[in-house]
Amino acid sequence: GAGVSQSPSNKVTEKGKDVELRCDPISGHTALYWYRQRLGQGLEFLIYFQGNSAPDKSGLPSDRFSAERTGESVSTLTIQRTQQEDSAVYLCASSSTRGNYGYTFGSGTRLTVV
Amino acid sequence: DQQVKQNSPSLSVQEGRISILNCDYTNSMFDYFLWYKKYPAEGPTFLISISSIKDKNEDGRFTVFLNKSAKHLSLHIVPSQPGDSAVYFCAANTPMGAQKLVFGQGTRLTINP
Figure 1 (cartoon, one colour):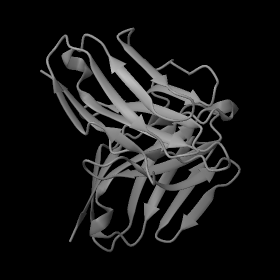
Figure 2 (cartoon, one colour):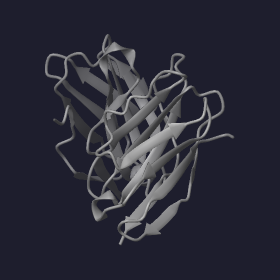
Figure 3 (spheres, chains in turn green, blue):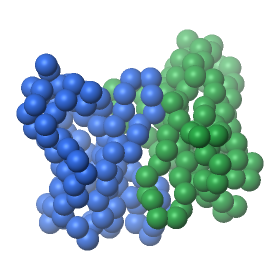
């Protein structure tokens, strides 16, 4: 597609439930990133996929968080046993490794844990 | 450890005047810096960037200045327009070309008519 697509755009879940967030990157972009933005905070790096290399998971806040990416396409971010502090906007971005350092972000998934 | 800091959470500027957004960083190995703009309910969009080998980059109304000795960069918008009202994030590329960006906390810019 023309841009980075994320679904759902909004998700309300009960504390303790699992959630899956989906990201469709721009076709041909080998790099894919997940960030989150909690209320009043900046963008917090979560995980980075680059081609077939092992992902950089250094930003995942706990073992309740995991992410997968199929080849150079769709990625899913899974949060198990959600907690209220997981409430945030989860942003996905993709980029090409050739030249341009700029990411293209999706519109994000707003997750609310109640 | 906040490696990229935007110490002003908000800024209000009169339409037509200059807006100056500031950003400080701590890691001297950062080699590329970017500014992103974010409207509510949208993802951030790339605005302008600068390599560490330069001290200025200009694109229309937007100019980014880099002072490596002070580990400081700034974004100048002139003249400011109401459509510039948004949250602005500065970001730095991690060393070794990993293309993993480290973002500041953001500054909310409001342009008053």
